[in-house]
Amino acid sequence: MSTPDSATGPVVDEAGPPADGPLTSLGTRAARQLATTTKSEPQMQAISSRWLLRMLPWVDVKGGTYRVNRRLQLRVGRGRVQFEQNGADDIKVIPQTLTELPVLRGYSDTDVLKEIASRFRVREVRAGQILFEAGQPVTETYLVAHGRFTRFTSGKYGEEEIVGVLTDGDQMGDEAIGQPDPLWLSSVRAETAGVLLVLPWDVVREFTDRVPSLAAHLHAYAERQSLPMNRKGEADVPVQAGHVGEPTITGGYVDYELAPREHELSLTQTVLRVHTRVADLYNDPMNQTEQQLRLTIEEIRERQEWELVNNREFGLLHSADYGQRVSTFTGPPTPDDMDELLAMRRRTKLFLAHPKAIAAFFRQCNRRGLVPGTANVEGHEIPAWRGVPIFPCNKIPVSPQHTSSIIALRTGEGDQGAVGLYQTGIPEEYQPGLNVRFMGIDANSIIRYLVTAYYSMAILVPDAVGILENAQIGRTAE
Image (cartoon, rainbow, N blue to C red; front, top):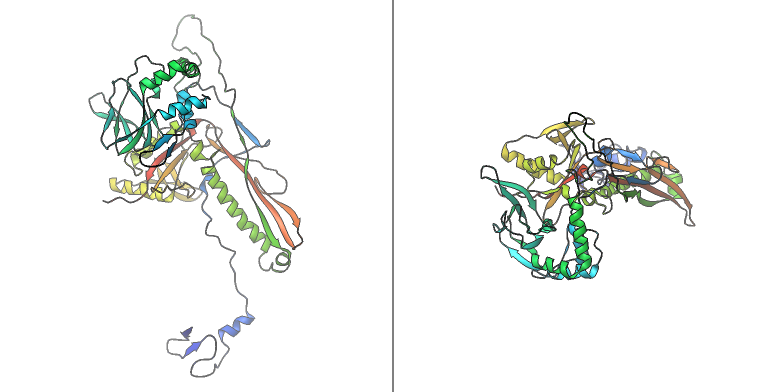
């Protein structure tokens, strides 16, 4: 390649003398043979801010296991039913997932579950269709296979009040178990075209009359729900207030869960290989082993944060209670959606969102003429909503339908929030909770190091984590 030596000088070929004659001084290419270069450390594009690792309080777990003791819970939490689809009209309930329904939690007769699953029928609904209205008798129970549905009631002055949004995997009608003449407490309208799996209420009664084990399970569930409990579903402790004189004070005790959840430390590992010739000879000006180790640890930390978000055992997206999940009302994440997510818990410490979800939220703020504030965190100006910082986290997935989730967190043991778990003081520790162990030199002169990070996460009470789901992140037409 030829480049001009100056604006008016001759054209110089870097591979040889100028086209119109020999050089009259030493060329730059030859001069570089006697010069050194200033080098940067090896760079890595995949390094992210990893705000979750930085903001999460970490608890030192000396025994390798962390037990979350809780007060006895009487109200059974909701899960989500899953479906198997083999075509537009062939949608079936996966029988084992029916135990995610509160009324069937813990029921173990798989043959009965399979029979119940086989009795559901597919029903398509159109946008705007009313499924039922408040006060009507419950004649069917529903599972949402696809679509978005709105629960609403009539307000005190006749206006419509939205009380919830239902999406894929949610259910309607199971709350009528144990009632002689169940009535719908709210109305439901389809906001989009959708697909429901429907089971007539008469079929439920038929099963309870025919299967003694199911009848006993449902009876036990109804009795448990009738026991005194506080607003969070925990076994109630009798207290008195405002009394005068010398009445007899009722007594009680706080009961605990008999089978609390235990979190064992998970791990991320890799074996770093370095040739002895490289480690011996090529260490000036930078140590080759140290640079290899530095970038390896960066990759491990990136995977660690991904696991804290996505791991099916302890990750935030899978461990969050389904009662703490809300869906966006219109699709994109709006200020109203963020307010609802924020109102579900006390002392929310931070939001986590994919950068595209943050951009989608800002677009909705722009449309309303709102300017989100900022929060100063470790010297960084972080965008905030209602004073709560919104941290970017590219480990939160984006679905093929261009939707994502926004996570709200309360953190710390003192606030009964979410905490990270690790163990310090492990053998050959290189960083807290991470060690590098020499594995020897093989016959090919390869030095091997085992690099391991130990970690997990625990949610101390269910409302410590909330998720805004189905947040549409694509641009919409103005």
